[in-house]
Image (tube, rainbow, N blue to C red; front, side):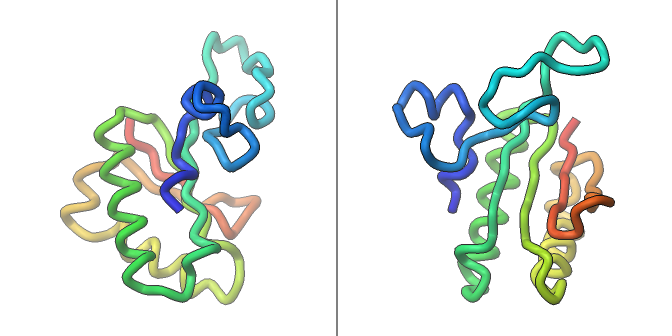
Length: 125
């Protein structure tokens, strides 16, 4: 679950590039495609997929907590949390978690993706 937050470079160094890795907002995952709009660097995007643990409440809270604290500690710009589409209960739980006072202090803003309702983006800077 937290293994999904490895950066692409860390993944390549360890030889684990077959699994989930960090993606960039600009371009395809792991392809090294040049960024658009004249920007010199793509924004690194860490991902937490909650699909494998959606039935266990304790694991969900632990994964979210570890993920958000790790992202704020490492200085990542944006993280992606994927609760999935489903009935929307898991997404509501993620949003409620992110709205807690002590968690809210760690990030700048949170948004739901307009094109993909099963994705939540959290901006740290």
